[in-house]
Picture: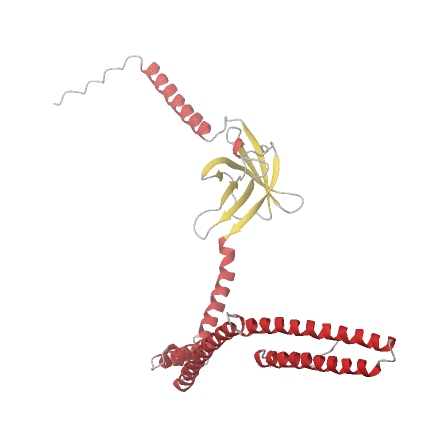
Length: 325
């Protein structure tokens, strides 16, 4: 026969140990809950921010408000306002509220992949801080809403590319013209034939340029000859023993002849005065007048000879009339 089993020994103070274990379990659960609540910011001092949007699509309670990639607030409630707009109530810890200013812009972005995000953009941190309970509009950036417009733009772009690449398109005609010009540029006259439309036109232009160069060379030679002629003319006219020098000498002689003629005329005037005063001696006065007349005519012939000499040496137009005083 098998021996009968003996009852297990009793654990001393089992009730006390069970109570202690229950208290420790409750304390651990309470600590964990307290830590979770603390981590969620339940015990932090916060201020309220109200964002107004046309609709609350994509927004949900508990989503974060981010600034430069860091969470600075959390959506506490979403409600419908009396004007039909959505009000998103956000709790922001006062420690992080310093990043929100009166010029801060709020945007609710919804990408093609991922959840909706609410972001804050502050350009000037020196602006006044955002007050508690402030109400601000929120901008929406829905990438999926741009897909229809993007598809329409891509369709129009593809149609334009098809029209541009068609056989009768302007681009194809331009490429054909470019190819034609390139073929012309491969000829003898290069780019000139391509620009002017053919080798015949290029040959004409080159011939015209050669003739122009020859004409310019001829003009230069004529200019050099003219310069040499002008230099010789200046030397003959204004140089030593030139026309001007001889003319000056002739003018000096002419002035002397004119002085002689003037003296002769003065003598004639004196004789005439004497002839008028003495009427009786007419024959003697007439004889004196004839001599004086001959002397005046001789002086006048000298002057005429000097004037002819000036005309011969001075190659310019002048008045040859001699006026006596």
